[in-house]
Image (cartoon, rainbow, N blue to C red; front, side, top):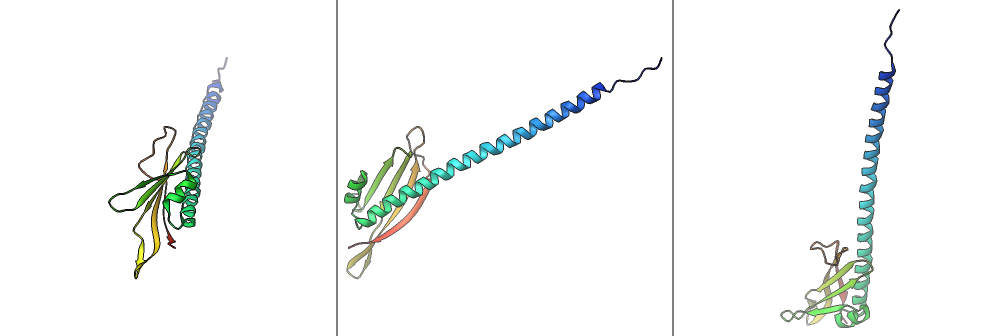
Length: 147
């Protein structure tokens, strides 16, 4: 009687190796999808921040730098600085979890007249907790004519 070794354990080992390879590939793909979802959310927040900053800038330009009038239209808060006489306006967009802060700079003077006003705009992401991050998600500078 002749005994031959069964090839069943070899086939089982091959199938186990293939299952491990497919599991590893699935884990790599899952990581790629999670990473791309995070990138998508970040870019959406930045795009919305740019849109909201533009809205605030254009409103300030329309009122030629009059922060009080712009704040009334935007329903924002103006914080005057007693030392410099300049104002900072803060507008919170609850629906987007964003806070836009516009800081007025000293106006440019040519001769005896103030010609244009400069401002720095920072947009902060409030997140789910409602408190702003210390790092802004969008920064831009703007200038407009003073009439």
